[in-house]
Image (cartoon, rainbow, N blue to C red; front, side, top):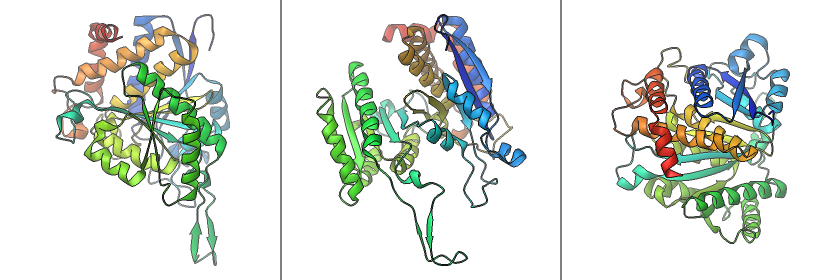
Length: 380
């Protein structure tokens, strides 16, 4: 970033399948906000990576693209991976995991916020106003052993397979520090101020140890209410009483599973944004995959990508102290609310007729008429 004019360099990875279809309109929306608000600007640099790139070149994530991403101010990613294209050992190609590992993006932030008027799978009226956050540790846990499975017995017919879970004090401390601070930030905006550690400490010793680190660190944040829950009970209560949650933090694999459940509470993957945040770098992307079954048809729901862009704006504003970015984030978030509010906008993934362009146009309309900005400023 150039401090004099708040110019941000954004690495854009469209990726595979519908990735480009949701990234392209999102970039245009960001350009519109840049023009409307001022105080910041973007320089977008598109990068080639993903499963198709691996098929074409033998490389999933080129070194030069990785270097440019590392030096950028933020990374915006569409979707990567194609079920039909895999590494020789059968694993799906997922350069987004390499980005997380190489850039040490340890905090996977998954906001769970239902939108007024948007499809919702739960009938209880309280589920129409969900607003909690799941934080997933993204560099350790069971994923730390990715690609290093150890087999017993003969190579052609192994007798056992071993994958090792790794939890470190340093990794846990930075994760919990991030999580307590995010909880404090939400509390200042009127939320409960509770941080819940999700684990399986009653069975696995590593989780019991991780829980102890959480308890140690909670003493540094007396304004945050610490809490615990076993992961199986958490899954149950996310369906039965999701409105009881505020901020949750958990291990990598548990977070991977629970974040999909969280997306379901919002209606589906097309509504679920995410961020993977490290000490310096951050990746913002929708929770959904490349959806090759609908690619090229204009059916993809861009909402999750637009909301991921709003998260990027907020992170840039917080990280660099640029209030115009925070305002832009709030405006975009409210524009999405307004687009769905009357219930007439139903994306195709919910059986409606609204494809990528229709959803984008509805959001842009509320950016253009000033209604989203008016609501953002009134709620500040």
